[in-house]
Image 1 (cartoon, rainbow, N blue to C red):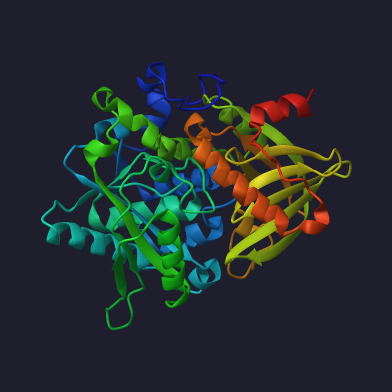
Image 2: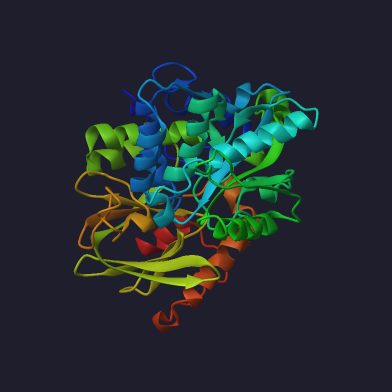
Length: 434
């Protein structure tokens, strides 16, 4: 049984020597039908688990499942590699897709990420380097964790069991690669392949992660609101987390793909909300059930090219607001007038009927396009997860606070005070339940 260990600590992978050795080996390190190999069934688990971990972002679950069914075959075998087993001389990059979910539901954006991968691969080879040997997910999220595995199925490349966010984040700058000043350039942007077999590409040297994101959004606007992005080229030695590469542990969060697989398997196979929460507690991270109620409304506004919004949940006695900027950033108890959770801690959703996770964009979406639409009136649980200690870096915390302030500013009529400092979820829960 996977849930035969019950450990509760402040994060599931804090940066200390005791936890680095054999952390949850049988649970989050070696998973799937065979060590380092995954099938489409495993990717389905990963998509569900990543959706839960994404704090409301990372792309719609329904879109990821449609994308997976179209891009992967049952016979496909994908490969992953653990962070302590990276070959020093193999090249790494992260490859992502970005754009409008509506456009992707319409069929656009299906080749953008694979094109970005191929262009980064060509760039490295033409520069006299080895081709890409590994990919790493940009973040945890139904779509963004799926994309590297689609490339793995097509090209046989291995995906690293980890990511630089541990959740999904509103802006590209809000990841540990950026915080640790890892080399970002070149940034390669690509469009979809057209009917003649061609696509557009742009290879640029950017000033920083904000510049990269701005240029990617501009590129996407000119190409059916979708784009592929490849960046952060580095070598295995830069991320290898064996005991000989101790300094690399701070650069990203290890084992998150395996963690997502385990959570997703429980969700998909059992479809039981209460049993899932028991299973979640068997992992060494702190989780809290923040609220349970009915989704009564969703309000969406736009600021600076981002969708910001508010999810309203009520149980007839108390009301909750969850504010998001693509990703959920702040939970506020309207009745008690207090913060309940804030980023970088994550605010995650589950349907109580069947333990289905979902993103903000799945809520009240077009049910004709999205098979996993979550209708208003759905009974849900809101689950808070304490952020990995690495995400409590001062620079990263300040970025989350700035995004929270920007999101609240879009709802001035709510009169929610801006949090002037980050309050960890465990501290908020201590006062909330006290």
